[in-house]
Length: 448
Image 1 (cartoon, rainbow, N blue to C red):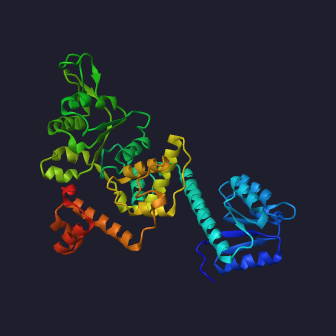
Image 2: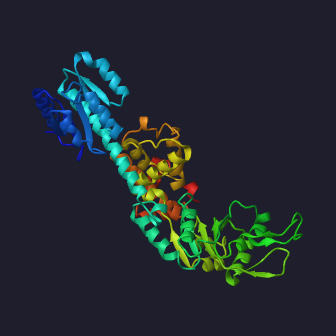
Image 3: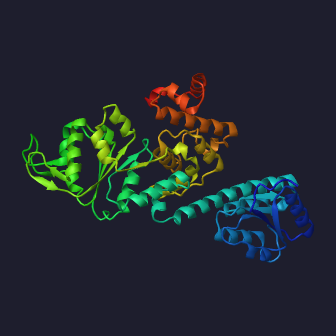
């Protein structure tokens, strides 16, 4: 008997001819498939519970309730249940009509054992995929609180959730460190939403996107006539965040001259609009985010050390997606469901082949890139390399290579693209690392 690769799934066989029923059952069981055999549709119907863990194989011509009526009842209860109909020689046209009514496939008598097993295996494979997706979606729907916002089953993300819940009620300023696309703003919003400040504004500023000429006005505000073009008074972001949270994204991009002024505001918790001599008291929490280590930048003179130490009351590091690959299935399904609602599309099933391909990607754009791929998947716009029709399960060697690439890239990132230092931290000879860089086509320039 072959090993059953469909643990927990079964074939529900409905056949009134005892000889045919026994032969079909034996063929399926010899192929390693679990079988429940029934002599009538009436006997089988009570077994067809919602989300039945298996597939239905039924003869069309049955006494009492026939195969077509059984098909209609099964599909009415669960449209995704694969139903395979067995037909006589003269019933082919009837079976084709049944396909339009929701049947998965049909087999014409007399049939070989190999054909029966092949069709059942394909149907079981599809059923397993449907049930796995349903279980995953139910798991996502049942999440509440912090787990509904910060998705992931890895130990790294469990730690992040714990830190967020621990830090949220406190008034301490926080630095969030993480590569581009790891979800720094999401974490900042969670710190705000799970704090007592949640009823007050969450004000986000992308320090890397604001031109230096208007940065000071945006941050501190200005009075009418403070400079050319200041036609009316403007409340700055810091003042607007009073009572709430000020999120400074890409803070490493803030001009050094403005860092001095921000430091004073953080120390005094008072802001002075441009063109005014009046100090305005503000009560806000600062959450800063950076993709580079601010301590290293401070040592290099590219970020003010005093501002770094003032902000770094608490810090929270977000792992790159490649370092928590076990979260990819749950995250991708989560984004697929979101995209389906947003675009008014049905949520497509995520095949094992697509999932294996997703697990093998480098994800240099992290969660943001995965989110984008999920959107394209729902819209039917996936690249050929990720299209389910072209996907195959990644081999062990490919998965090992993907893991090795992620470790090498992380070492290069930590050491600013310095191959010698990276090789030392990996405890391998420099030549070995150079050989691997060439083999995997990894450029060190992107880490400098």
